[in-house]
Amino acid sequence: MIEIALAAAALLFFVGLALILLRRSLVFWLLGAELLFNAALLVALAGGARWHAISGQVLALFIMALSGAALAPSLALLLRVRRELGTLNVDGLRLLREREKQDD
Image (tube, rainbow, N blue to C red; front, side, top):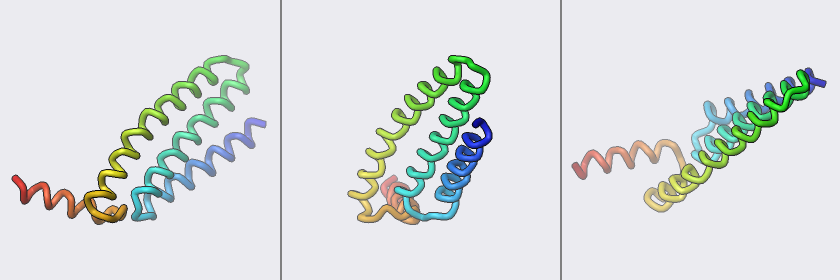
């Protein structure tokens, strides 16, 4: 049982990491970060179930709260970048930084 959960968590982790490292879109970066949070959540739940401890479920609740708290400002920033640049490509963030330097 725990081996299956850990294998699924490892798969989620590596897919999330691949999305962050290989894609150039901010949407995929955000999706990859959420997959990393879900992998940690699955490991916490599997560990709690393995050792019959409630601490795994409590940790999972904290991970869900952290994931939700990180998602809201990330989506707001994503919408702001889309409105300012017209694109969600990571290279567009460099343009935004250069604009900020020119304004100073």
